[in-house]
Length: 235
Image (tube, rainbow, N blue to C red; front, side, top):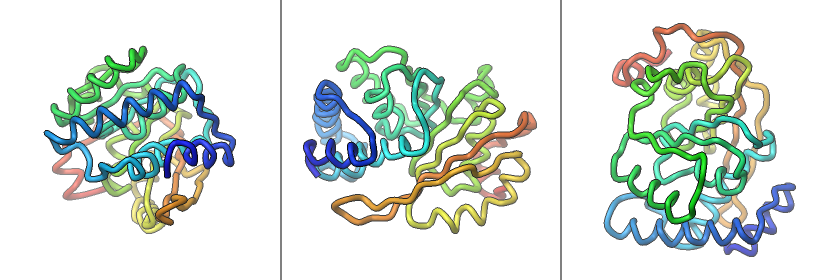
């Protein structure tokens, strides 16, 4: 996939990316490749792979949710996927990029500075620590991509979501198996699946599924537990 086919494939799904936003994504890709030469940001470092597996994949959730001027938190954002890509294409979003690895945070700050992006902050913390900074029930939207299995991920993300707010999980071919394993976590956290969207990446034919969850009530303050406990004993 190149940027021309990227734009066409998105337009097929009524996702419109302007020429100016394409230029921003090109600069983002250039920085990603430069920084990736000296630090481990992504295993996908060819142009076609970055465009399809990072940029395109980050935007497909626009099929089932309208991004506008909401407060959005991207948990475990890594090199900025999907949070920073969403911010570039939907500039009215107010985005927090949460990433525990310092070198990745420095990269994200460099991209934000280079592209002169406003209303987008980078936080170098773990989710279970950042929640204590008056961020409980704070965000309209929370996203996560390639972070952990859903029964672990829900406990890390749902406490940040406002009541009636949304959590968007970008998952691969095992999404339905993960969803089944997460039934207990969904019950405990009073959260329900309200929509989903399946797709395959145009070139690679890799399966993807976007899961959209709504939070129904205030989360008990004992969640999230420390990560070691969550991982060892998922809800």
